[in-house]
Each structure stands twice: as structure tokens, then as C-alpha cells.
Amino acid sequence: MDYVAIGYYYAIWLNDLQSAELIFENVYNNYPTDPEIVGSLVGIYRQIGRNDQASRILNDWLLYNPNDQTARQMLQDLQLE
Image (cartoon, rainbow, N blue to C red; front, side, top):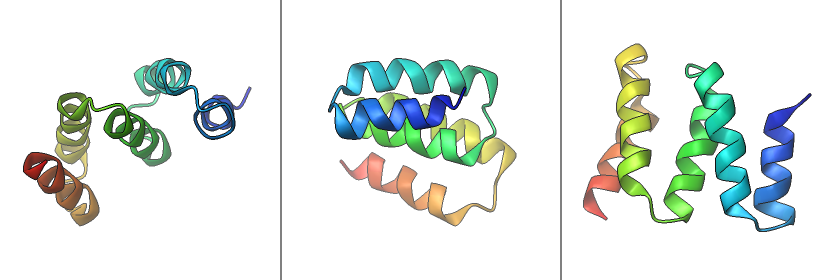
């Protein structure tokens, strides 16, 4: 089953960010190094104002991907908000 597509469906078409958050968190627990999952979960967290959680996910991502400048910039942006 394509949980990423289901998460996007809840987030975009149903505007149900809480359900999308749960879906992406479950998928992230199984695939914490998948860039699409990480980006989606960070995006959901930012939309619902959980910047601390978004920062945690990005910091974890940067442990495994220290040269990811996009993630570094997103983390800096979060720290300024």
C-alpha cells in the first residue's frame, strides 16, 4: 500500500493534517532515511506549528546526510520562526 500517497491525500484533498501527520509518523518510524517521508513529515509539522518536531526530524536527518544543504537551510529557517 502506498502510504505516502494516502498521507498526501489526507493533507491536500481532505485538509486533514492530523490524519496525515499520523500516517507520515508511522511511515517515518519504518523508513527514517527516506527523503520523501522526511520532507513530508517536516512539512506537516510546519503547517500545524510543531516546529520543535520538525527541527528534531531535520537534526536526525542531518546526522545521516550532513551535506544536505536544503535540510540545513530548512533547519535555520525553523530556528528563526
